[in-house]
Image 1: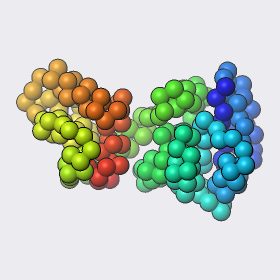
Image 2: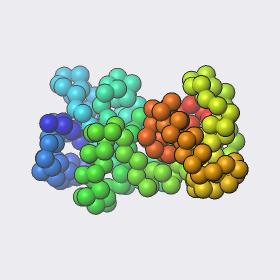
Image 3: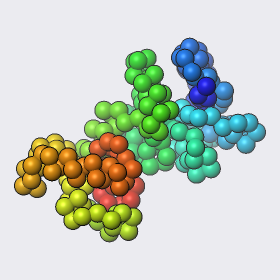
Image 4: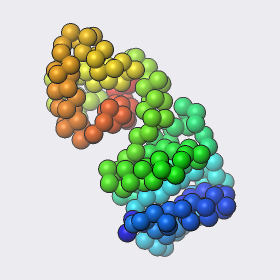
Length: 215
């Protein structure tokens, strides 16, 4: 059974979400809290959930601070942001705070269930909203020093990583680097393995968190 926590200051929303999640096979809501302070108190007194759905705008402790505290203290808890905020700054700030997924509150039930399943089994859920926000917000300036201290990559892989943090398609990246699409596939798979990520958004998140690109 996958245990879920709901952290939102609107009780009606918590009640509706709890009823919905408890109907999903294999999921059970074990914590409900109206703010981050209340949720952290619950974590100190009771078992931690597998997934925490955290709103952004809450009294006493907002979603950013709550996610950061949870990520630092309870790293095994997977954080899914669920908010009405769809602006670029909020999404990026929540991801930087430790969220591994971001959904809007008007998300369809089918996508919501998919997000829970992805977070539960893969550890992250990168929706089109998150992917488009990241790719559109990254500045072209890069700094390869940070990644060189973390992984051992080839010069062409470094170039590919930087180009992957743009809105270019893989075919356009191949043309830019004057190589075949198959070679690009090789660079991508090598970096997936070295960085332990499974998607282009994973590459971008790695680049952001390690200061390789700026947003």
